[in-house]
Image (cartoon, rainbow, N blue to C red):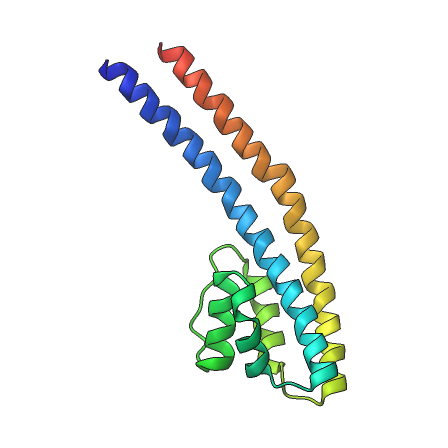
Length: 156
């Protein structure tokens, strides 16, 4: 009985590890989806309504993930810069900080152009993130399930 309970715990732990690895890539994909959606919204708000950046962030808050929401809140509402991304690499963080530090400092037409240029960056990283979810994330999940079954079969 204890052996069976231990095997179930090991089975669940292995699958949890594979699932958490999958979710790491999925969160990155969701972040870039939200970022591209925010950039499209910001471009429209700037070009048609000539809205300020803090107003755009306040307006769009309910629609994006918690990581992007926290980052933009800290950057434009609270005016702090103490947010760390867990799943973005240094290059991506530097590029985002570089863009958002200069965001809202030019006239409307220039801002729209800057947003569209950064959208290309975000779309490229979204495509890379989708590819990693499809390849590495799903592979980790499938391997975790297979490995969990193998471990259970070996120890039965």
